Length: 123
Image (tube, rainbow, N blue to C red):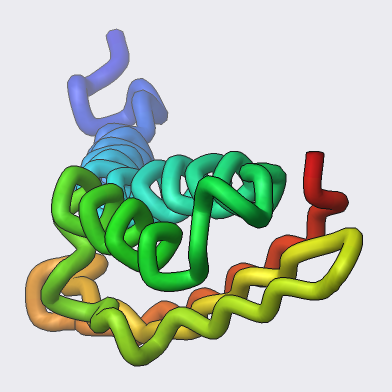
């Protein structure tokens, strides 16, 4: 007859994997929204870079981008002066660079650096 401790069930390894899985879920829950907001901001930057030169001045483009920043809840890390808008004869280039500190795990904070540049022909 075997004793209960001799079955080799590996309860400790299951507990370790459960902690790792919970940690991964926690990190994804905190980091994912910042990346999602960044992708939405890049989409809006592409849209504004393609806008016509005559109806969309650089100031109007900055106003629209700052509205998107507020909607994506990035206003803590992005200011109007961080956007660089250059309009050329046939194209427009928009860039922004910012850092976001995030508590990835309890007690562990990491600063994520984002640099978005778009260059699109003007329609």
